[in-house]
Each structure stands twice: as C-alpha cells, then as structure tokens.
Image 1 (cartoon, rainbow, N blue to C red):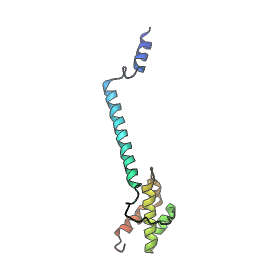
Image 2: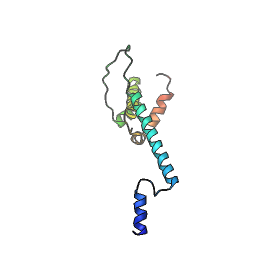
Image 3: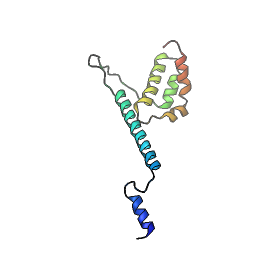
Image 4: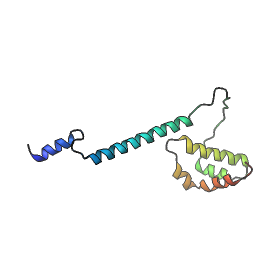
Amino acid sequence: MSEKTHSSRLSAYKNAGQGTTDLRRKRAELSVALRKQARDEQLLKRRALSPEAGEEVQEEEVKVYTTSEIVQGLRSKDLPTMTAAARAARRMLSKEQNPPISTMVAAGVIGPLVQALERDDW
C-alpha cells in the first residue's frame, strides 16, 4: 500500500488525520453557530408571543407599506400618517427573519426616522 493512499485513508477516517488546533477551531465555530441559532430562535419566540390572557386582543387592519410610502409618510406633516409610517418601518424591520435593512437605508428611511424621534408632539 502506498504512502499516499494510506495518508488519504487516514485523513478520511473520522478526525484522525487532522490536527488538534483544526479540530478545536471547528468545535468553537460550531458552538458559536449553535448559540447564534438558539439566540435567534429565542428572539423569534419573544416577538411572536401572544398577548396575556387578561388582555383584550385588538384586531387592527394592517396596511402593508412600501419603502417609498414609508419615507413619504415619515416626511408628512400629518401626525397619524407619520405614526403609521414609523410603525410600518418598525414592523417591516422586526417581523422578518432577514430584515431588509440595506433596502431601508438606501430608500432614505433613517433621516426621517431620526427627525421623528426628535419631535416632542408624539
């Protein structure tokens, strides 16, 4: 049996052909990935919690806004329109697993949201 075949078989069998530093690094990466996944699942569970048993559930008709509608709504002088647009932006960024952050930034939502936070008449 040639040395090349022997070493390839040895490296293919479980982790025998790999160094301890490689194995330790892979275990660390795997544990970090598992912790991130568990944390993401916990966040999704918290976001999806239903109201308490004693609270009344208010059925509210939710309009789906586009990013341009959100920007226009945030720049509006009408307070209910601004509030609805801010809620739509929050809803869009918090409900999805992979929120469209770069799309919202590119659409120019950040500036109007910061200006809305500076208002005193909410």
